Length: 158
Image (cartoon, rainbow, N blue to C red):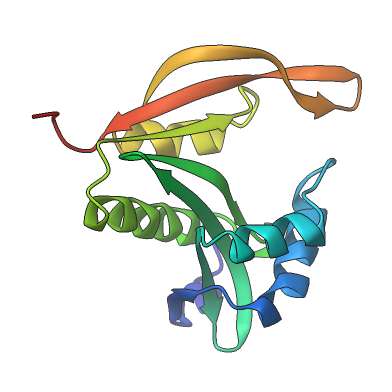
């Protein structure tokens, strides 16, 4: 692990429209089938909870959370490939969970590719459990890939 990179402090903040180009670039370098610039713009316009994590003046990751009817859905959580394995993904996830908690969310959901073992490990560490499978959910190089659906109960009903 590069400890020099770890020593540089990072902070979380609300995503701004000026961040969309940087976030889109991270997305393109992270996925074979990335979200478009327009999808990120629409998430901001829709009022979703969008956060970035940045080191000095460089955005290195982002998270997008939709909240409605007492439930939340993590729509996207990604760290720049150059800055993975430094704890930024966990910090983003913790922030998203804090937002959901402050908004009095009862349960939070997400989909993840079963092939994304690191993400699944992080979600399990944070108390998510696999509740379902969505067949052919993700576009893949050769056809479609299923999605594992995970949830975390944030508060008990009643």
